Length: 163
Image (cartoon, rainbow, N blue to C red):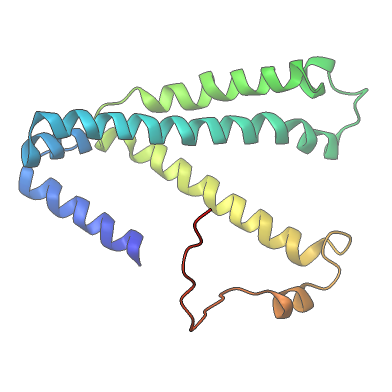
């Protein structure tokens, strides 16, 4: 719900300011100093996301490949802990992430955004099916759901302890 609301706010600001980027929004609404701050925050946020994706891909892809092939069937540089992770990180960074970072217009990024949504849906479905289908990993999914503490609400306010 919050994501939908913020998305609609971005569309509204874009329509009113006739701008397409966060930095341009900040420039038009708050001035050049806020544009610089927005640009730095965007850069920091994106660097964190890119690092997380690269770490995930480089550590998981060799394991995923080993589900379908043996180590002897695959080249050593693809599945080894050292060179395999460097290979997959480089491949992912320069063949997937770099081309998606080139366009400057929001309109040109619709395909990248769609690809990101598809990746998120795939990851969600993979976690869902592993949870319900892998009886070795999760023997009793319904019992796990019953035992899970999804929300813990307390009526008491806990004061912060000073160390």
